[in-house]
Length: 231
Image 1 (cartoon, helix red, strand yellow):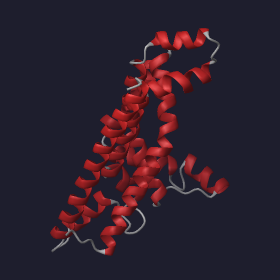
Image 2 (image 1 turned 180 degrees about the horizontal axis):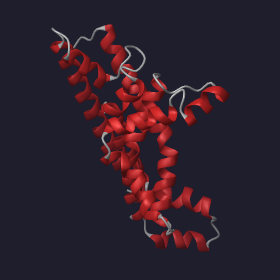
Image 3 (image 1 turned 30 degrees about the vertical axis):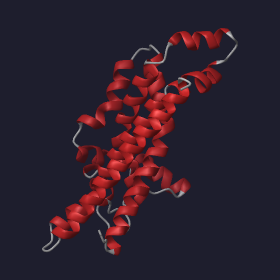
Image 4 (image 1 turned 90 degrees about the vertical axis):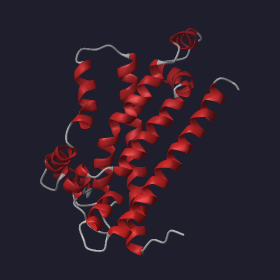
C-alpha cells in the first residue's frame, strides 16, 4: 500500500486545489472565447486566436516571468489588486492557480471551440425563428450540444494544471505548504540525497490522478452525449 508522508500529502492536496480552482475560474472565459472564435467573424480574429494559444508555444518560464511582471506586488495589475482589494498572487497558492489556469486555458478553449463548431447551425436557426434570443439560444441549444467538448476542455485544463511546473515555479517559487505542487515537490526530491522514493511515490500518485480524471472525463462525455441525442 502506498503511504505518503504529511509533506507529500500537502503537495498532493495543494495540487488538486490549484488545478480545480484554475479550471473553474478559466471555464467562463474559456467558453466565451471559444464561442467568439467559433461563431463570429471580426477584424483581428487571427491575432486573438494566436494570443489565446501563445502559452502553448512560449517557454513556460517566459509565461511565469510575464505573470510575475504583471501580477507581482509591484506589477501594474498586481499592485492595483493588492492595494485596492487585498488580492495577492505572487508567492501564494492563488498565484499558482493563476499560472496553471493560463497554461491550461488554450487547451480548454480549443476543445470547446471544436465542439461548438460541430453544433448544427440549423438547430440554432430553428430555435431563433421560434423566438429565442441570443442568450437563451446559447444556454438551451448551443451549450448543451457542446457539453462533451466543454467536459473535455475542463479535463485537459485540469491535467495541464496538475502537471504544470515552469510557469508556476517562476511566478510563485517552490514554497512547501504554500506553492509546492506535486511537480515542484518531485523536482525538489530529485535534487536531494535519498529523495528518490518520495519522488516515485508522488509520480505514482500523479499518474493515478491523471488516469482517474481521463476515465471520468470519458464517462461524463458519453453521458452528456447520450442525453443530447436522447439515448
